[in-house]
Image (cartoon, rainbow, N blue to C red; front, side):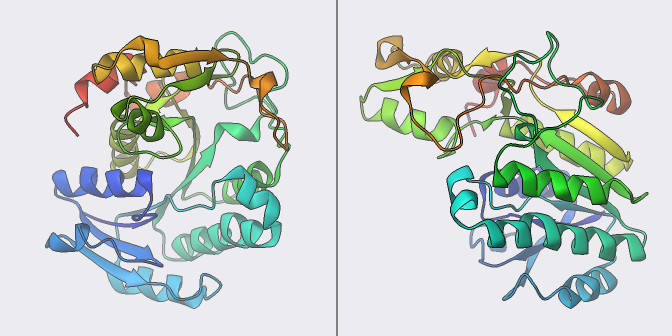
Length: 296
């Protein structure tokens, strides 16, 4: 099999590439910067994209490579960066994604778009089982709005799966577990919120799910997240246990003590029931996943 993917210089994309290669799926990466480590693999090649507004490149690459599926994992995902650069965020997260999906649709190629739990407002507690695919999104910042706008258009196509995911964690991730682990390694204490809840998923678990989805070509909207709602403080404890750091390095803090614009969402937990049922896939609890994948 062959896949086109984006985001290979990012956290999820790099792990996804390794997951596909390990399962004998050749990769063509559309990227603005090279991943030199992946280039060492004979089943990996890159198409460098100088201008993400050059949509004709997408048509030509899909036509030339004839992939079995496409996974679009690249995004401008930092909330603060999107707030300060709303035009660029909408251009890439929304318009580029729509053009990419339409190019795939014209050539009848299955297309997977990665979205976010932050399309939900989260200021009121999520349902006890988490937000499901039938719950109505209410994005409150540019990042969430840019992702949701793409969702709406992509779900009109019959070749698309939209995958909303939660806090992606594991080793090395500067926006999730990795920055915490770096502090632990240096003996620094970290303050983590006890009153902000997500359904975190290990990056290796999510990569495996995305490969499964690409192989089976299930269309529609799916929530790919861990099976338990936990706070960032709980996640920090799980990381400490998995990597054998003392729990004394973690301080409890309230999200209310941290000023942000827009305000942080307290609860955007996702319900993964549909994804598990339709793909016959079982997501791992984050504590168990961190221990299992600690070797990565």
